[in-house]
Length: 259
Ligand SMILES: Nc1ncnc2c1ncn2[C@@H]1O[C@H](COP(=O)(O)OP(=O)(O)OP(=O)(O)O)[C@@H](O)[C@H]1O
Ligand SMILES: [Mg+2]
Image (cartoon, rainbow, N blue to C red; front, side, top):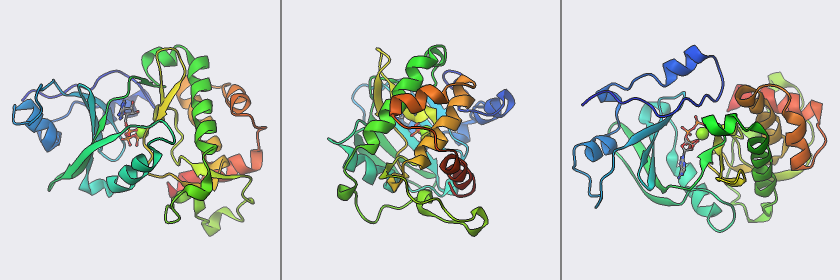
């Protein structure tokens, strides 16, 4: 099989060199088994389509588009439990826009889940990075909607980095407003529809109840990586909050040490 080139040139941050390294050409032995099956015609899909690599994460995980489905694959070495994300995606159904889980599997190399493709693009696509105003508004709108869900309905066993209190960070600010926190509110995890509106959130494995500033602090920081400086004012305005410098500092540090 030929090596697979990634699609697009979206960068969630870091230098171009880091990005090239992360999205380097895949060697055949790095391609997940379900994708190899698809490529070799072994798939049970009625109308096989050419798999398209759309994303690689820092831990070696990959996301592929297979026509109207997305396959998210995580190597066992990454120590990520996609079961966490599937549980949260199922809970979100009917509550908040997010991918619908179709199936899942695992083998000696890794685990994967298949979701239905949403008709929307990541907020860091080439197009949306050239139209940052709409992208930033959509990201803020998505968080506002997620944070408006009733926390009393959230399963009590959901936890994530947002509730940790490493002693080296000093005392945690009191929780400003408990919400269902996304847990990785970076720009690529918002999808935007063709009209420039919020379409859905992805990457929800760390959903848990916590301080809304856990998302706002990380979300505002990530805007600068993807769109350049100066977008946090619009982000806070659309969300409907005044900046809270102490909580921003705390949750950026917590995200850096625990997520
Ligand atoms: N069902 C879907 N419909 C449309 N796009 C999707 C879908 N699932 C995933 N994507 C796209 O794939 C990208 C990667 O998905 P996701 O964020 O879940 O992967 P990840 O490896 O956990 O990301 P990260 O690098 O943030 O850890 C998303 O930004 C989105 O553009
Ligand atoms: Mg992501």
